[in-house]
Length: 394
Image (cartoon, rainbow, N blue to C red; front, side):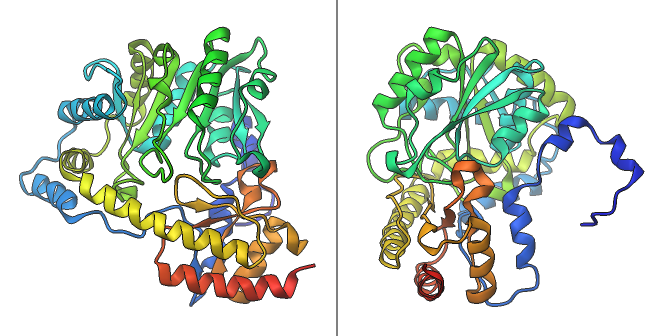
């Protein structure tokens, strides 16, 4: 990318100039052309989409089912998703009015922000956090407000710390658990405490639960299932992580009818509808994909135990992630910054990790290691990392 100034730069909007390029993608430009790299970087399952799910989409193409769907999504997919949320978490949503099928959870997040935010409205979120969180707030004209978290508290957030950040301009609280990048979860009691704060202050909670099925110790608590918060919650979910369907780009938002109606208005002008074959694949995933999910989660859990033990053994302190498929070790014993560590590890040992600083100020001093890769690659990566740490440990 050129750094030469251009008169066209004056045409770029202030909101766009306020956001930085994704710290993840920027870093992975370094990977181009390198051979023999073991990647613990990209947050994507190493599984192919189960064939019976892909086959459903193929059959829909063979039948010529390539037309637009309803803006809200195929009714059967909406019905099955609502039934899933009822069966899994005991929440009742209306398929006709309270759900929108989106192009991945990324679009759902963007729509939620644009639907509820006015200029200068504030959205409280944790630090570190997924790279798109603050960017979507800024692009919608809002202001991100950070609440620091730390490994000392397993990167969970305290309701009192969130409440301390609430002002007259606060419109929403954005949470994402299990967390990308830390793998942290929120215990049920902490979520109950947060729910009490949200209700007391009449604040919307946007809960990104794309990693909900990837929970290893105990059951995931769906925020919208907590007593009395459904009408203040925008629940985001999707198929990318649990069903190994990242490239299909199918997600959903469920919320009170007024909010879904507002989100759908934006969606119909910008996207029209999620891709039809991808929606058909998602229908098949909900109907017959449970066994696949269980098998993949069991495998991720085995890998999780190996990488966490391995990182601690080589001198990179790592708390035990309870969900998602990321480990978030401290690299402070090396004396290197997150970027120095990540770039050095890639160049010297050909192992790719993501600097923790890409996820916020509180991510500095950590790196994100994705263990959604083969056990053999994880074990080899740990050997290479051990050499690198031994060389650089202060």
